[in-house]
Amino acid sequence: MKLALIGAVIVAALGGLLFGFDTAVISGTTDWLKKEFGLSDFSLGFTVASALIGTILGSLAVGKPSDKFGRRGVLFVLAVFYFVSGIGCALAWDWWSFMIFRFLGGLAVGGASVVSPMYIAEISPARFRGRLVAITQFNIVLGVLLAYLSNYVIGSLNLGANECRWMFGVMAAPATVFFILLFFTPQSPRWLIARGRVDEARGVLRMCGSDTGNLEEEIRDIQSSLDLRHHSLQEPFLCARYRKPILLAVAIAMFNQLSGINAVVYYTKHIFEMAGYASADALLQSVIVGFVNLICTMTALSVIDHFGRKKLMIIGSIGYILSLGAVAFAFFKIQGADAALKNHLITEVARNGVVGTYGIMLLVSLVLFIVSHAAGQGTVIWVFISEIFPNRVRARGQALGSFTHWFMAAAISWTFPMIAAASGWMTFAFYALCCVGQFVWVLTVMPETKGISLEKIQKELGIE
Image (cartoon, rainbow, N blue to C red; front, side, top):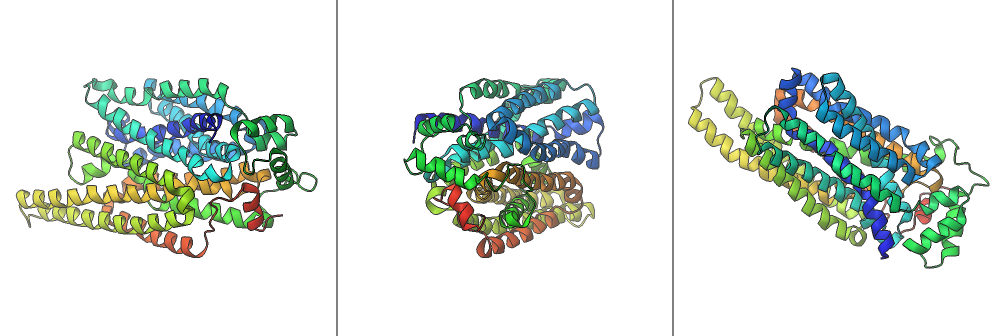
């Protein structure tokens, strides 16, 4: 694997790190937000989801600019959005200003979820593509862990009323690094060929490596897949020709969020507090969950090109069902004990014993859930979506997959505080049921894409 390729991948994947940080940093600030801006459960859910509304629009809007200005050009703009969002949230003077800056961060997250994995897929040889695109997911998870760690460290410094503002503001530092390093990365060779800049594309392929070792053959394959004599880069996307990859992308993205993963990421501290943990302990549990996510993502990243996408999804689906079932059961017992205490059916001591026992079960089950996510959906989703669309519509296909993912994320994140307040165990039981649906879909519908060039995947899906 060439050094230039590794460098370009790492820089592009920094968009994923900022994506993860921005997504998770709010998990340690939900109590502050309620107090600072006087929010109800409904308005808290909307505040958390505000970034996701931006993410939905960002993922939709970024496809055409990526085709027009190139993948790298769009990443520059996203880096600026991340920087302004971090500083703006830290200095927000009222709820509306906070919402605007969180929305801007959401635009950056949505754009990065499209452009970073797409760019990496387009510069990577097929034999390395799975693990290299999965570096985006690794960086997302690293960003989540860094957000949890940052929140925990800042929370322990006793900074008073400005504590949570610092939690948001630190994102400006990695955003600056990301912007500077982008100057040293090349454009996507497939985008260059689509724009007729074949000599530049040849140079990038020489620098980053090719599938066959024969640069001219690979350039011909890319030109053939584009087939610009019979297809336009502006041709309709939502049509019968692309039905199969569209349905695959929408399905995997919907199942990703119906597992409840973003509810866990956004409300980790809140979930542990619901189970009876103190605030500081809940922040520490969040760090544990984030660390496990990172380790397991690293493991899955190293084997995705060996085992393939489908096997990892099967393993992850089984883990989802078992862990979410256990989380639902733990909450059922804890909430039953709380109700019994309220009705004077048990003593405080008895209630604390139940909460202690099933609180541990909850932590173990959530860790298993994160392991399952990292082993399956977390590692596979962005790799799979970046592979299944033809070169000429990949930006729009990636945008559709990301849009579906973030639309579902917004729905889950907005509704979770209200639904969980009514019945935590039923919420997680519903997520477990959705994961049964994913398991069936993986077994019966999902194709394997490991080790196949992007151009051959197009042919295997029957797209001319």
